[in-house]
Length: 128
Image (cartoon, rainbow, N blue to C red; front, side, top):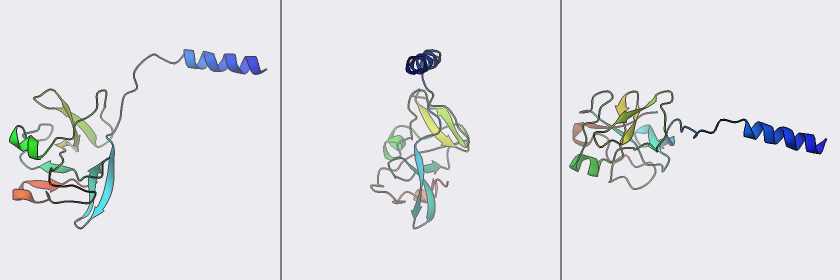
């Protein structure tokens, strides 16, 4: 009986398709802050949207992207629910929520920081 169970288990494993596992939604969390709940990356740092972006397209490059690093997706990531992917002109894939590309802010240093919210009236903390 034990040999039969082992054989059945091997058959099951060997019959699985040989493909890479696609990564779904980005590693995010909701963080309570002084401005209410915000969307944060898995590192706990607040994610932001840029009002000069258009749905599905980033307009933050060069010096802007140095100060506001895009939330880059890992290779093989796929859209999931409200989270989608946009291709940057650099070729990288960036996470977006509801079509809005997501960014970090270099001046946020710890979980719950929202120092970029309202910056120059064009940056907003992303909401869950």
